[in-house]
Image 1: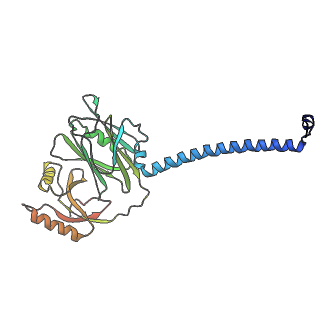
Image 2: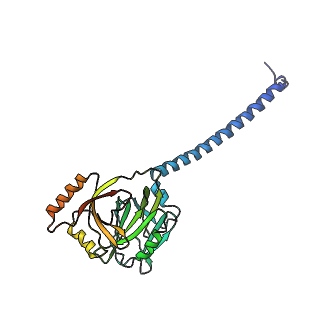
Image 3: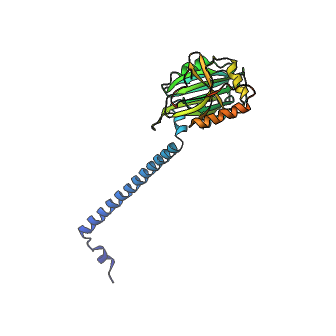
Length: 287
């Protein structure tokens, strides 16, 4: 049996000590590498998650930047309706290179919900039609001036509506412009965001029913009352003249068929006739 003294006298080879030291160094390096890989993996995962969110809701991401979010998002849309029934809303606007924000208040206090509104999207020309209810103190001149500062906006004009507590206006956009409308609450605001599309939009011929040119008057609004089942919209074709338009068809035959239907249903002689123009243009002043 080996004694304790004999065991303590055993000489450890110098190479073994070096090997053990090298092994310890490699273990420490491997530990550091594992920590770095875990840290990098966490960063990459966070980036992927952010890219995934941005790819799936780009409208929301863009709508929230660069104007600070002063409320919570209710909805993001291209067309549709929202808001709540109210009355006597005051309006303040804020504009950047790509965005217009409309903020609502009443008697100096911020509203928690946006007044009831609708947004329609139309073609030929590309335009958005805003109708905001309960906004008796809306200064359209300020909204028009701010909207026309946006480089992707071609023209902004009001449209007659038979409701003294509502306002309707049209925003004509450049061809190929994408947009989102974001509704906020607490406090209430609407934000219109515009951006140029990467997709090429090829102009094409459209057919529709239209009227002769008319000035902005109650006659325009009464036309909507005469054809309540039809989607009547108005296009400004000169500084002091508008036309009413129904439909957007790919062939003249479709438009003629619609005109025949209106003729049968109308109690008076229809004021519409078939016309055609390009999708990126307006109808002519006269046929």
